Length: 423
Image 1 (cartoon, rainbow, N blue to C red):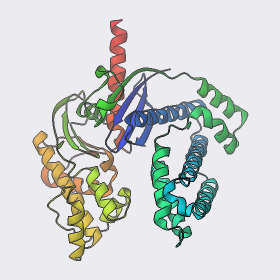
Image 2: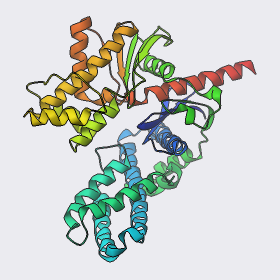
Image 3: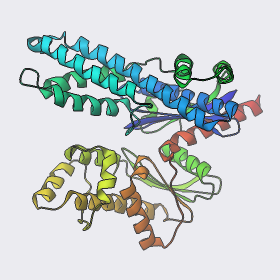
C-alpha cells in the first residue's frame, strides 16, 4: 500500500500524519519535542505507523468495539515497556557519586516506588489517561509515590532528582514500541480468536510503502529531509484546515511558539497571513509558564478558568513577566479562576488583532493548534468573534493539533502524483 507522510516539528510537540492515496488519514503520531529533533521525528513517525496498522485492522475486522479493546491493551504494553526502561535507568543513577551517601536507602525506596507504579499499570485495563506523553504520566505517578516514601534519610527532592535524570534518558531512547513487536501479546491479553489472529497477521504483512514525506513546523530546518521536502507552516496549516473543513476561508493557529492568522481560497491556497514570530507572548508556551507558576498541568488551566465568576482584566501576555504579574494579582487577593479567565481573554484579544491585520474573519473560520483544545480559549474566541464580526461558523476538530502535519502529508501526496505524471 502506498502512503504519504507529513511531519510537523513544533517547539513543544512533534506530530506525524500518514495518508493513503485517497487522501484518507491512516495514522497519526505525536510526541514531545526533544533536544534531539531527529529522534522526535522518528518517534512521531513510528506512532503514525502504529495508528495506520490499527486502522487497517479496523477495516479488516469491521469490529470497532474489539479493536478499541485491543488497542487499549496494546497501549498498556507500550506503557509497561517504557516504565521498565525508566526503572532500569533510575536504578543505574543510584550508582552515581552524586548520591553515594544515600545509595542503599535510595535504591530501596526506588524499588518500592516502581513496584507500586507497575502494580498500578498492570491493574488498569488501559494505559493511564490524562496526557498523551509518557513523561507526564510517569511524573504524576512517580511524584505521588515519592511523597509516600520520602523521609529524612531520602527526601522527596532526592527521589525527584533521580527521576528527572532518568526520564530524559528514556525519552531520548527509541524503544521497540512497534505494532509488529507488541500486537500479538496484546491480542493474547484480549483473548483474541483464530480469525482475529489471522487478520492481525495480514495487517502485519501489509507493506506500507512511503512514496513521499514533507516536513514542516518551527524546527523544520532541523529535519533530516532534502530542501525540496520542506514546506512552511503557513502553507501546511492552510491546506490542512481546508482538507478538514473545505468551506474554510480563515484559519487561526495558536501553537507553542507562535500564532498564525491565515486566509485561504476555495482550494486551500494561502492568500494572506499574519504571525507573531518575534516572541511567544500569548502562545502555548505562555500558558505553560502560567501552569508551572501555579503548579498545575496545562490541561487544567481551561477548566479552572471556566469556573470564573468575575474575570480580571489582563493587559499583557508577556511570557518573560508572566510569573511576576501572576504573583502580583494573587497578592492583591484576586482569585486564580478569575485571573485565568482574564489571561485567556487577553490571549485571544492578541490573536484577534492578528486576524484583523490578515483580512478579518470570513465565513467559515477554523481554529487549530494545541490551544484549540482549551475550552476557556475557545469560549473567549467565540465571544470575541461574535462581538466583532457577528455570528460565524467556527470549526474545531478534535485532531486540530495535527493540522500542520496533515497539510504536509497532502503536499507529499501531491508531489508524488506529480512525479508519477512526469515519469
